[in-house]
Image (cartoon, rainbow, N blue to C red; front, top):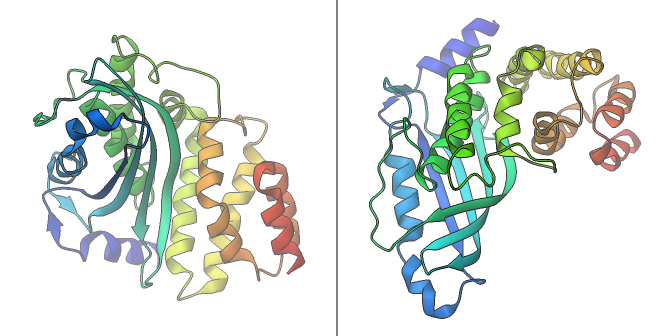
Amino acid sequence: MKSIILSLILFSSVVFSQELNCKVTVNMDNIPISLRDRLSDFKDVIENYLNKTRFVGDSWEGPKINCALDIFFTAVTNEINFTAQVAVTSQRDIYNSPGKSLMLKVNDNNWNFVYQKGQALYSNQSTFDPLTSFLDFYANVIIGLDLDSYVELGGTDYFSKALGIANFGASSQFSSGWTLASGAYNRRRLVEELTNDSYRPFREAEFDYYYGIDVFAMNKELGQKYIVKLVTAIDNLKNKIDLTSVLMKTFFSTKNEEIVDRLKDYPGRFEVFKTLKRLDPAHASKYDEAMNQ
C-alpha cells in the first residue's frame, strides 16, 4: 500500500518545467525613505527568479512546491549594499487531504548582498553571487526536503548542491552567514548535517513519517504508527546525534504542531509526548498540553 500511495502522489500530477511557487514579501521599514525607491521592483524580481528558474535538470513531476520568503531589510550601506533577515517556509500537499504539511520554517538573520534597481538575475550555480546564490541555496534545500518526503533520501543531490553553494559563499567577500557559527540557526550547518551520514537514519525515518502523514486521513491508526515510528527512531539515535543541532531544532520547530495534532488522541500518547519532551524541550509546554487534553 505504501508504494502505491507514493506512486500516485509522484506520478498522477502534471509535469512542470519549474519547481517552485514562491510568494515573496518585503519589509523596508528600516531603510531610509529616500532609498526605498531603489527597491521598488525587488519583490517582483526575486519572485520571478525563484518561480521561473529551473533548479532540477529534468522536468519536475508533481505539483509545484509552495514556499515563501518574508524579507525584512535591516540596513543599507553605499546605497546598494543591503542586509536583510529572511523567514523561509515551504509546504507540501498531503495525499487525499485538503491540508498542507509544513516542510521548512527557518529565520535566517544574516543575508548580505548587492542590489541595484532593474538588475537582471541569472542562475549560475558554478559561481557565487551573494544575491542569487542565497536564493539558489534555499531553492535546493526546499526541493531536497520535498523529495526526501516522497523517496527515501531522494533529496541528497540537492542538499549537496546547497552545501556547494555554502562552500563558495564561505570563501567569498560576503562570507558572513555562510561560515559555521553558533546560534539557533546557521544555514551552512543545516546542509552539513543534512549530508552527514550520522543523520541518515533520521532522514530515513522521516521518509516513513511522511507516509504516516499521507495515509492519516484514510487510516488514522496506520498513520499514527508511522509518526510514532519517527519519534522512536530519534529517541534511539539520541546518543549518536546532537539533538541540539540545527537540523534537529529546525525539524522540531517546523513539525511540533503537526505531530501534536496527529497524536493528540493516540492511545499511547502519554509515553510518546514524554519522549518528545526529552527530545524537544523547547516545545515541552505543547506536549504537556496535549497530554492533559
